[in-house]
Length: 320
Ligand SMILES: Nc1nc2c(c(=O)[nH]1)N[C@H]1C(S)=C(S)[C@@H](COP(=O)(O)O)O[C@H]1N2
Ligand SMILES: [Mo]
Image (cartoon, rainbow, N blue to C red; front, side, top):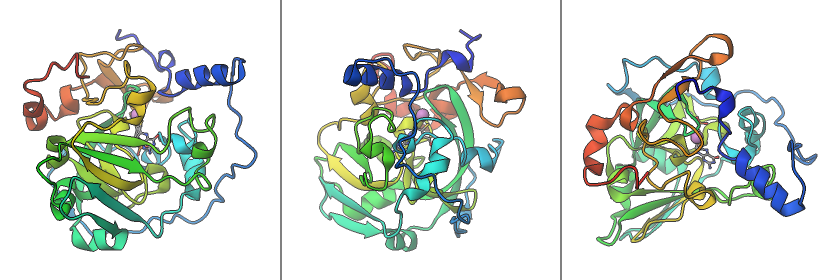
């Protein structure tokens, strides 16, 4: 399994996208053309603004993925499946004004805008590993605040056992939400979820920036989730709604392929994806021809000491 190359790995959606095309049209699709109405962003000036933040101790020993890779190699299927597509198309996302509505099992439901969020919660830099379920990885200097601070504001009721997150739904400005082929066959809006314990953990942050500045749209502007011990798809982008729930939410990738993408999605080198090994990962920006440097994947992505106790009584093969 260590001989696995990138070619053996089908990106998360392509496989299912093919199936969807076949189902929908009775033909075998070989490539997905960009619909004519999708406009590539006019190359406007970089809209990312500098942020004020303090530096955290975390991840000082990790070597950062170059900024151009972090903002140029993305998964954001709402803006197309190829890794270059989000950087090309995501500037059509309307990020200002922006509010997050927090509701459900809370004593104090709120709708809060970005201005309020940024003044309410001091920002800090967190250097975290990011491990995509497709077996590539990066190290990103995020800027954000702990999700538990936001949850304290709304005061979860005793019934709250899960937190559900939803990406903005705006098909007029988000091509993949309008066109199932462009959007990789996912059900939109994109939804993710955590247990309450996971959401309250101090490593779990709401990120509003990276590399010292606000997020670019392709990275999930203006605000997204970062949970460093879980596969990348849990890190839902451009969040507009948060709901606290008594029951486990239905999440996008789990709905699409429940045998491939679990609810927990904890990084685990010992539990392979049905179609590829999770034992190692390609280091994006790691150098070499075609970026082929690989390294072993760590249990809980290297955060076992911090989060292992959350799963002490869980069979991780069954609850992958
Ligand atoms: N709304 C939304 N959030 C998303 C995705 C997506 O397609 N849509 N892709 C996920 C996946 S698979 C990964 S690996 C990370 C990638 O984050 P990055 O592009 O900022 O590195 O975003 C996650 N969040
Ligand atoms: Mo991913």
